[in-house]
Amino acid sequence: MKNNIILVGMPAAGKSTVGVILAKTIGYNFVDTDIVISNREGCTLQHLVDTLDYEGFLKVEEAAALSLDCEKTVIATGGSMVLCENAMKRLKNDSVVVFLDAPLDEIRRRLTNIKTRGIAFGPNNTLSDIYNLRMPLYKKYADHTVDVTQGTEKVVEEIIRKVFPQEDRR
Image 1: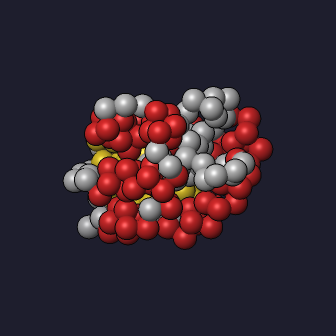
Image 2: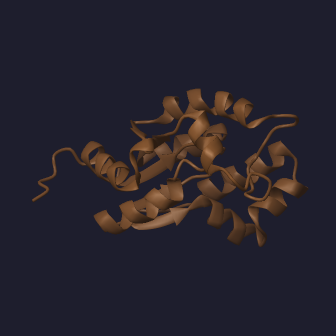
Image 3: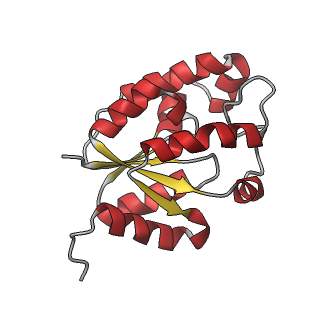
């Protein structure tokens, strides 16, 4: 049975914010893979991005995801997790994957700390480049897609409706 919910999407799409509220609402645990990485490595994501090459960072991200052993948990992944094929296959095995979809203009508006947030960029990549690279992967892995521009409360409600369609919500 798929009893975890994985949130994927671009940086600043709201995965951590939505994840905490969703977990609280449905009585699940919450895990943020960015925090798992920081705890495992003993430093910030930005430090890892600054000191590892792009592929090195993705290996660390994949290892963190593969280390998870959760049930009834909402898991907010890093925006680049979809580039880690083994991790995504494993996560998808016992989870429902929800893509938090935000247009590039919305990501640009929300992403005010791009230089310090710990975002994995390939050499000479722009935000548009990573958006265009990742969008097909978010869609590939998603069981459900939710538009985040409708606001956090409505996003949480829509995820619950899509993931638990048979539930009586009295």
